[in-house]
Image (cartoon, rainbow, N blue to C red; front, side, top):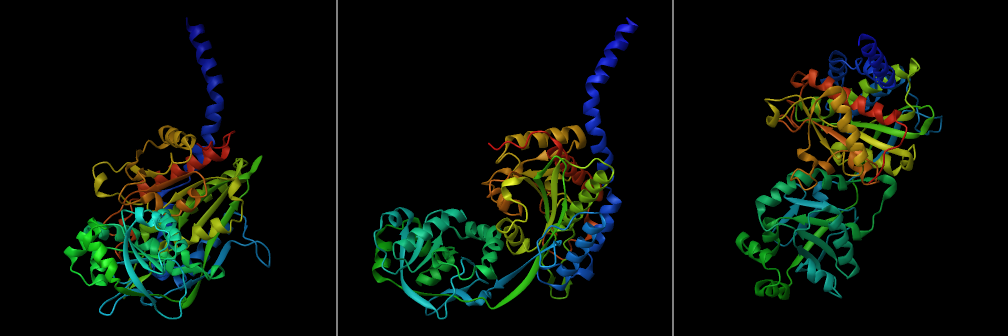
Length: 501
């Protein structure tokens, strides 16, 4: 009996040894990701000296220089083409529009972007334009043959930006002069939408300098009932009634009266220069396939004399990228490098509307067709009120959107190594916070590249000067960074690529 037991035990060891052989290097290098090192990095990145790292600022340039030197010291390769050879910095220039040069108005009221108004587009006008206004729902818009140079207030719950672009393009094809969406007949609902979407519409105040001018058909406003009431010179209650019945008698009377509305969408007033920071680790036999690991290193700068240090947002992600990169670099130096290549990228201008990652996906240094995944990290250093009693968690967004294969790998990796609670609360694309669209992974996802977004929730210090290093739970940050490392390791070293659904 004893001999039989020893034989079976030996057989189990022989069959299991390849698995152990794969796990041991991953565990060895994951263990180099330490809370103490993360604290050291984050203390620099979120220091007052970097002045809040606002894109285009001195502090952002200092942060870029620091990250570049870290990439260089750990042996990552420069890969951004340049006149003097490859470098680590992907430079680009933005043109910026002032908020008071974009507005909707009538003889009594002017509503610019500092009010409850959203604007998408870069139509450059020298002088204000005006047109008779018309209230129309999406059904009538589709059926109208000619809109005769009208400014259209388009009713109906059109909240998705792609749908808005489609309807505005259709309206311009039918002769509209300007399109204004009014998607809610409840001002509180619009205010919630405004809070979630303002940053992304604000990004439309910036243009890559080389892209100007943009066609007018991509320009439109989004407003709520209160602004509509001011533009139509009716009270708020009347505006809500019009929105609830856009084909009724009162709406027809309004269209017959054709109140005139003015608008201005002027040329950009200034430019700013900023840069993504890229470090490349070349793979072995599958080096043409690329795993991308991203975090944004910019933040929102100063508020008066107060510095927004952005320790969690997104110093936590930036520090994690650096620690994960160092772990992979040590593995490669010891002969355990990944089969697939890995691009470590800290992006700029996320706070202006995902602009840095958008620039990379428009001007990739490695083909998007050979990019197998983006693992994006934004705010993983704290916990939110929903997890005060169970802090051993991380929110995951997007893992199942494009590749069930990626989702299974992610779940299995966590079960094997880190045993975090994977919370998918924000994974619903229709969640009111719309997290799937709100960080840099979105620019990869919309190019059909599988993504996972790692996030630990919003807290009371979000976008405030009190988002500081002392609030970070470094034990949690370490564990979450290790999960991302293990996931990247599994993807980079597996035989088959990730299957798209």
